[in-house]
Image 1 (cartoon, helix red, strand yellow):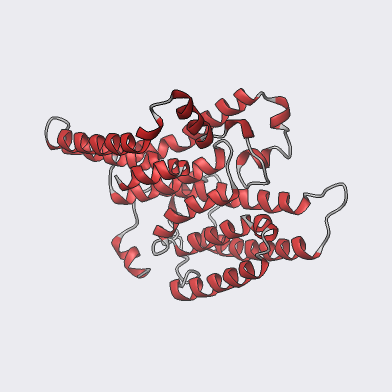
Image 2 (image 1 turned 90 degrees about the vertical axis):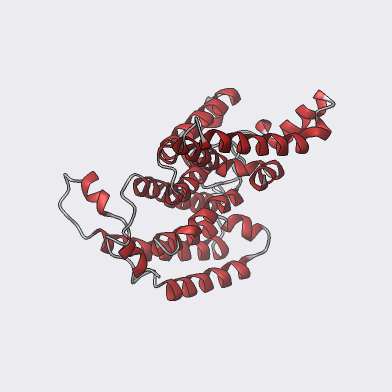
Length: 315
């Protein structure tokens, strides 16, 4: 009921809706749809239907009013994207002017198809293996899939992916700290527009210091702790490399690039013929991080869960 209320309060909770649905359905199937599982399924369905009915009851008396509410919830008329958001469509638009060559309806269908395909493997995984570990991973992968591929995404929507990523701070501290820092950085143009440069700098530096210190993120960076074993199998044709060392150096380089772009966005005026140069660089740079994190957590989801011994090391 609480999640149904949250979904009716803000449509962006759709980012987390499929994991809840698949996890609960998987639980019911596992318990047996001819026994306790059926009773649980009926209870869940009744709770969802009653909550939705109570929320929508004031609007159902007038069909025109219902349609107006739906248009407000799903602002299709605004287009595929507005500002320089760090998702696939805005980044791809640098090379291919999607909004110019594709009709609005085709953009909508393309976005829907890509979003479903992006989250489907993770949802099937939690449906067939409804464990809490798989549920948490599906929350991350679903929210990132929606952010990267869905229609009319706002910059702040990355916070909906950051929330479930926080659930893994104890398991994969380096990856999570890196992603959360990139999430804040991706909103830099929006923060500058609202005059929040000083809070951005102070909180970013404070977060990096305390997270790396308290979580020992850089110390817990072995291949086992980063769950990088599957990558050796995926890239078997390459010579064996120290992937943990590569990840740590990419982390340092990424933070340096974020700092440089932040300073440039404030101190250097963009060329007159490229007024959106720095917002585009920030969004594209952040998109690479988000896409990499999405692929990383999908690989983790289809790999064996970390051993209890490895989890205790991080505690």
